[in-house]
Amino acid sequence: MTSIPAVEIQDLSLTFESAEGPVYALSKVDLAVKQGEFISFIGPSGCGKTTLLRVIADLEKPTSGSIKVNGVSPEEARLGRQYGYVFQAPALYPWRTAERNVMLPLEVFGYPKSEHQRRAKKYLSMVNLSGFEKKFPWQLSGGMQQRVSIARALAFEPALLLMDEPFGALDEIVRDRLNEQLLKLWAETRKTVIFVTHSIPEAVFLSTRIVVMSPRPGRIIDIVDCDLGSNRTLDIRETPKFLEIAHRVREGLRAGHSYDD
Amino acid sequence: MTTNANASRRTSHIRTRLMAGSLGPVTVVSFVLLIIWYSACLPMNSGLPNLENVTGLADRYLAAWNLERPVLPAPHQIIEDIYRTTIATPLLRETADGTVLNARNLLYHAWITLTATLVGFAIGVSLGIALAIAIVNIASLRLSLMPWIVASQTIPILAIAPIIIVALGSIGITGLLPKSIISAYLSFFPVTIGMVKGFNSPDLLQLNLMQTYSASRTVTFTKLRWPAATQMLFASLKVSISISLVGAIVGELPTGAQAGIGSRLLSGSYYGQTVQIWSALVLAAALAAILVAIIGAAERATQRAMGVKPEGYAP
Image 1 (cartoon, chains in turn red, cyan):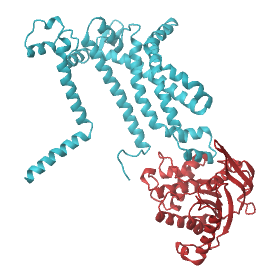
Image 2: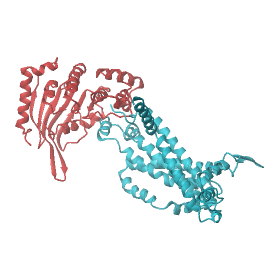
Image 3: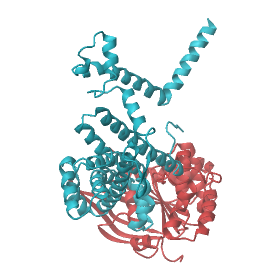
Image 4: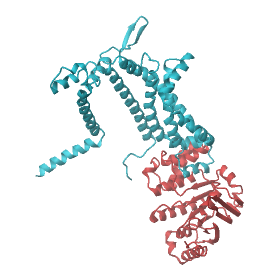
């Protein structure tokens, strides 16, 4: 399975038709993601990073170009339930407890009943939410809700995890802690993660590679290797290597006029 | 000084407690209404011959509150009449064919109307939900059905009720069913409108999630749209049950039915028995209140099971 790229994108474009004329959301995107990588898409709003993630998830259709997810089309990958998706908001179902939210995909996919409880317990504990199984979403903080949604994405054990600014709405302290937990989780499960963010430190801290994107038209302007090793702690953010990579990402964003109005 | 302050704080505390629930405000409003009602009895009834020879304000009021056939009866007269026709009248009656419900008891009439209401409510709610499901799932139906559904409610029910009664009567269907159909005709509407809104209430991400699972329409419906619509369902049911009752009563009017709250209203107005009309009205209102309260209790039980955030909770 290792030989097949997790995602392979060639010359992909996506144009939305709007009243004011066509919007070039993605233009001539080329990207290959290997199995087990942690890839971040970074860029300002409007650069197409979320759109690109939604194309991989088959929630949007590209206008031209080719894309393969685990060697098949995004639609086949979706029908084969090969990826878990974590949205910007937790998107929990408010009438379900934390564990029943985690069980939702298992119910939809028709897993045996005996598996439901076991997996809900396992993945809630993996996101440090043991003891919160019976809580309803309104009884949990924003960070906890997002962790439930991550457990829900892990519950059916997809090889690919797509995360769309999952920590964007959380404060920096909570975000730091969740970033550490996410790295640990990634090390434990060896999944391929594609992670959308607009935070440079977050991207550098988490990723093995960073895809720098730019708006109008949405495109990739740089891909930065981020070889900080596997045992990262929050302290590495002070090291020269970390700052150097962050600098290169920032330069890339500047070159793409991301800081212009 | 201190004890005084404490005492006044305690009174204000009691007042706060009393006004916090609905009991306090409801009592105050009821009391004010009663005063207005009793005061209005004299001016409303002053034209009646019984009052012509009575002089003195106090005597005139006393007389106005105890007339045989007043224009506006006093509340105690209505309570008396309800007592007389319910508790003081046997509910069952022996006939040659065995024991039957006694038509002189008002509760018998309430029962007749209640059965028509409940059957009409069941038909109306089922139809309402079915239409909402069809409209949510089939885009062309939303465009083609919605105008007809709205138009159906612009026709006065008083105009359409006799047509339904006569049409069904001519094919041999009489009694409960025509009344229930009129009742359903009114009560499906709020359910359809409410449930279309409820089924469409999940946000984009909640729907996207189902899409990433490649979930079928049926699964998306049972796991997402239906539970998301629960709140709207109960709001719709409360409106629907009360107009089901109105529909059943209206259905009893055109044929001059022999039994039911509607027939009591009609015979009361034929014979100038205003107290009887008011008794029937009060009974109808009480019936509606009980039905809405039952749905309210079911709503609270459902909400508890679905873990709805308690009102006023701030995390």
